[in-house]
Length: 231
Image 1 (tube, helix red, strand yellow):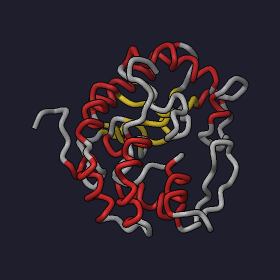
Image 2: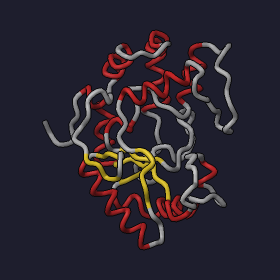
Image 3: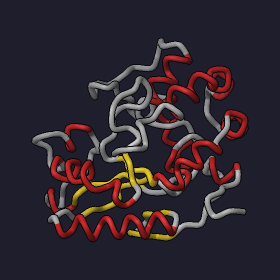
Image 4: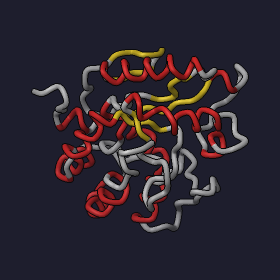
C-alpha cells in the first residue's frame, strides 16, 4: 500500500493509521508531525508557542460527541454561538445543526491523522480555558496574532485551513489546520459507500435518517471546504 493510502477503516477512524505522539495525548501521522514541528519552531521565532488542542481522533470519540449532542446531553450552538434546542426539529435539521461544528463519526478529517486544532500557549495565562471559538482568533482575541501568522506561513509547511470561511456547511474554524499533501488524497478516497458503511455500524440514534440524507450531507459538509491553495 502506498504511503499516502489508507484503508476504508482507517479513513473512517475505526482503525488507526500510523501515528506518532507529538505532544501528550496528541497524535499525528509521522510526516504530519514532522511538518508541524518545523512550523512550531518557526512560530517560536515569532514569539508564538504553538500547541495542539486536538490531533487524531478515532471513530468512537467522534461518535460519543455527536451522540451526546443528538441526545441533548451536550450543547449545540449556531453560528452566532447561541444554544440550539434540537427538540421539535426534524431529523434533518437536528443533524445539520450538529454538523455545523461536529463532523459525523467516520467523516471527521481528524480520523486521518492529518488534521489538528492549534492555539498559542504564550498568548494566554496558564489557567486559561481554551474555547476554540472564532472570537479567540479574531482581532482583539488572544490568538489573533497566531491566526495572522498562520495565514502568512502555514502554507510553507504544507498546511491549509479547510474551514477558513463559511461556505454553507461547516462553521468557520480558524484553529483547524490540515496537511494538504495527505489530506487531499484522503478526501478523494473517502467515498459515500465507505462513509455509509461506517454510519450503519455506529450507535447514533438517527443513523437511518443520516444515511437517507448522506448524499446531501456528504457534499455540503465533507467535500465543501475552502480551496487548498491558501490557508
